[in-house]
Length: 394
Image (tube, rainbow, N blue to C red):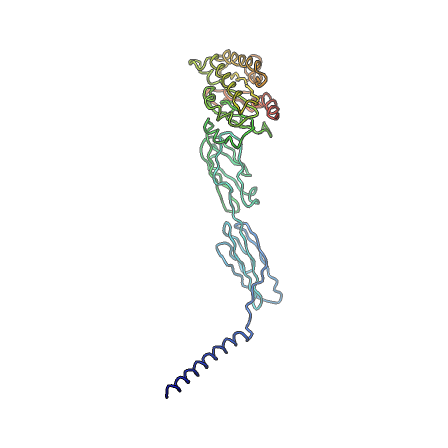
């Protein structure tokens, strides 16, 4: 075979191969094939975790249905009658129902995920409440709430957390067998902690309370003041001298509409020091009030001095001293009545010439140094109405 004949043969072979390929392609493209039948979409089914749902298919005259799931970690068939159960805390999958000799049906299953919108919470001793929110909303009231430490913080059946004592607690919500938690830290009331808890930039034009134990333990103060915003910057064993040192952070930084002060009890009780003399306490208190009034942020604020109660345990030892202190401050308030008001809490808590025992409780190593619920009701009547009225003025 010569070169020419060999070339001709190769060309013939390639033509035959190319023609064969074209014929195969034409057959594939032109010959009708049995089309793939897409599943019939029956929509989305929303489920809570660990619940069941019955799915049904109308397949009249057709026997046999094969049920399958695309994700056994989210939802799985309990049986071959279409009863499914959600397993995971959130997720999605597809459930397929293939009718023997017929169509395939499909549902998208969406399982809700339980979430707590707040992972950690910082609260102050006896400073109101905070509500932990759950998602989805349907879980909020149906969930079971628990606290790991009731002395630190308690939680209601709807997720309202109430702080009690310095420390840490874990608040857990359980819903349909799924649990989520938030850590709660309760801080002790102090000059530094209070100002961190009430950032001045976010709490302007309010009523500021400053004092020691009496105000610090006034747990209903926010409820008692109603719609009037209140910052309770009182703390245990607060002294006039210390508050005077930090008054710009504790009081004037908030540009208050009204300031309520009840200080001096702890100093007057310290009978053996210079700080504890009635004259010194009066001078320090007058200086503090004057500084608050002259500060540019609180020139227009109404200042209320609340007289110190005469506690039963201190009545014999400190009675005269406390009465003199309160009377001197009453006279000072009268001289400066344009911006200063005297509130006679001490007198309202008396029964004749002695403290009314029903207004005082024994929650201290030395008894009767705290107010009872009835005692705070008296304090509310003496303080709240006048302060709220002053705070509403422009």
